[in-house]
Length: 428
Length: 162
Image (tube, rainbow over all chains, first blue to last red; front, side, top):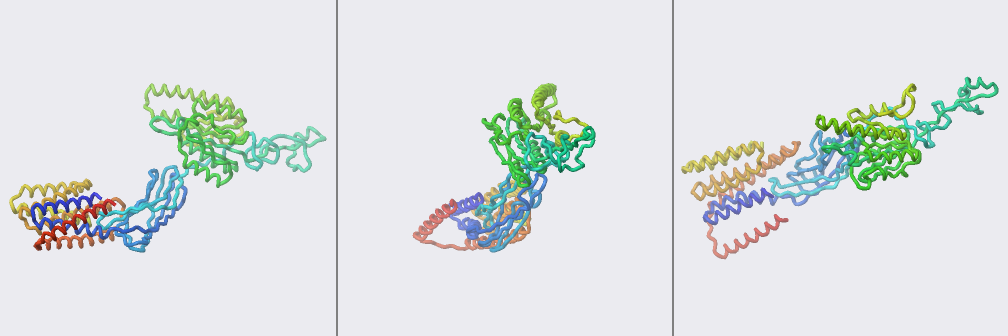
């Protein structure tokens, strides 16, 4: 419109100058601009009738992977000299190859297509519209229309591969799995010796014990291995995750949650997710790949938030988790959380806390000064005391220095321990 | 190609204006056009797109002044036409450079130059022919034309506002 305004202004000024000077040649100068504008008006697009199709190579991706989007456009109206196609890509998505926007010449009935590759940060993105701007050949008069399209992209958090994670909740489910159930039956790990029962295989007979009692046989009993209920609580409270200079630990927590969801479901367990932050977002317990996908999509959209109601962990709805099941809390932890976590343990839940270390994290952004060092020491002491209190209550706490990869930490703290290391919770 | 043509048009337009003013001893004005031309090239280099609009406005004003001073109207019209072409091609070039090139760009450029050429020829011819016409209108016919012009202006303004 500014260009059109300029030309109109020049025409009126020339006409005015022509009338003042009473010179036809000055008026004649304005004809050049009039012809230019007239042509623009006559050739301006009357309507925009188009059909769009979009194909995405995948509706989900990880932060490192790329997604190729192919868009095709068919002009079902009149010939368009200049058509600008503008894809409304969200800020966190970037184009790696090709171009999302195009300028095209579209004769009537022509179909043209183009493709481009994008990648982005964790999140759920709606690619649900495309803007079309068309103009006359000189670009003076423009017409804009937005076309709705189907398209949603989930960039799910990266998943680190863990070999195994050992959990021992008090109660397991009926299906066989790999979680020791503390009950005798068929299994691998030795549990106890009992009287021989008719039908026991002969290789179960414990000959050493039976030799002590000439009139009786004894059989080995093995620990049944079953699947368990695992509830993962992801702490998305702003006050627990956000630190100096808007640095957030939440991405680390999401990474840990995604990795644990993956391994627990791969082990056959029934897994649920509770996102505790601005509000409660509960993913109903389930098994298998569908549940994995469901949880990953929730994690893709997870954002830290603050709410007065969920300021503390006191409002965790424990009824969501079956009694005596496994609860994994992923949280940087604050001192006020200790009481609630001890109550959770007292109710019979087997609690594991994965705690990205906020002290080391925040200290890495602070200047290397004696005052900072002293403050860091004080805060670290408070944190160590808090962790000791939790451990004394029977809660397994894994203090994760986020400068180290999570799989390394998880392997050393949650993996199957060699036989020569006594059982019990591992200290941070 | 559009960039080269726009530069060429601008040089021709400025040269015609400068030469016309130089012939009639307005050498300061002539020098001013050359300096303006240098600024124009600098502004193009630094992508100051607004500058070309001001230059077009100045060129039109200078051409109208030239006609009033008695310079050849055909030269002035030619200078204004070249200024308009340069201004249009710069805007066109800027529109295209916002988006990475694709296979349609040569076609779009070719068609743009074609339509621009036709418009330039028609505009120039009409401008030249209008200078030769000398029509005496009666008072009522003049009044009628004035009313039509006013209505046309109102219609155009309402159309643009839509």
